[in-house]
Image 1: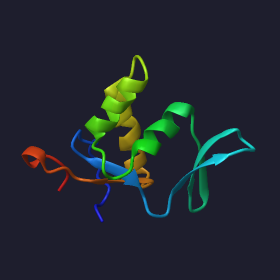
Image 2 (image 1 turned 120 degrees about the vertical axis):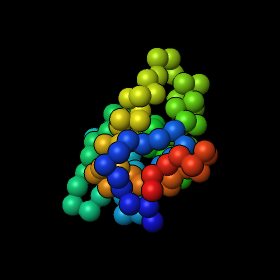
Image 3 (image 1 turned 120 degrees about the horizontal axis):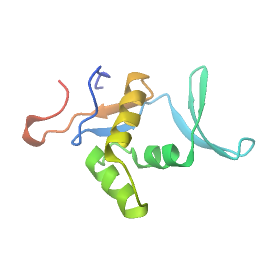
Length: 105
């Protein structure tokens, strides 16, 4: 399993939820939450949508493209910062991309 890094998430990386993390709808909060051992993070709609797209198959660039197709004004840099924070928190892991030798090593 790839280890989280201190760097940023690259466009060719394939993010996915860590095996011990679940994204679920919480009716009591009327919103999505990220459940990890001993923690619950309440997500806004945008955060939940990003994480729903993090399936380990899509690259970060593909996730940003999908968001741009759905919504106006998507900031790809902000999506990468959001994912980078979640990687640092170990709630998201990335499978490094191989295009052009890019990725984390």
